[in-house]
Amino acid sequence: MNKRPLVEVINLGLIRYNAGLEFQNVVRKKLVDEKNASARVQRLIFLEHYPTYTIGIRSRDYTKELEDKLLRSGADFHRTDRGGLITFHGLGQLVVYPIFHLKDFNLTLRKYVDQLQNVVIETASRFGLKAYTCKHVGVWVNDKKLAALGIHASHFVTTHGFAINCNTDLTWFNKIVPCGIHDKGVTSLSNELNKNITIEEVKPEVIYSFKQIFNCDFTK
Image (tube, rainbow, N blue to C red; front, side, top):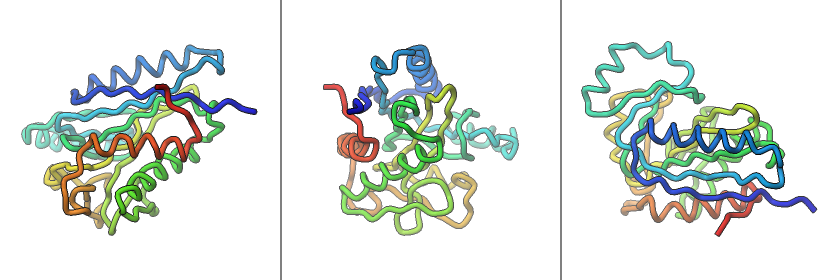
């Protein structure tokens, strides 16, 4: 009988985007360097960022003029190695970085992305919302994006992940075309449920959803 992957939850709280990126890379290197599969512990990082706009590997679509404009709005701006286009991270948004070894879950990268989206769908369902996927990567409710997703993988180990809008100030998204999609809006759990839903309320539901979708166990 195969052993279920073991996952440790790490709560970083509210930090700058570059600090979260540095932490991811430290955790990623540790997992890559551990050659004994039975000794490997996966990590699920929870955090919240100060207002930040990030772009993925298709960064040529975004000019220095746009970067300067967004910086003047009071947000940070970062070019990253994740997939996807431009998005916003900020207060009231739960950012989830799974640092997982794909071989330990017997997953292809495509299947991994599908399962991350399913985690968000399951999480939303636990708040009574019917979320879904479409031709655009991410998770949607009532034709508006609830969660953005962008990942990177190297040596079978993943970084980056997804971000769920809990009680996020959605006006930050008005300054960009989120993920390059012109005809869709953005929403949050609080907006859809017409009541305040905090990050702390969402975390345990995300953990539960990971257990179900990824068939894994969590450290105590």
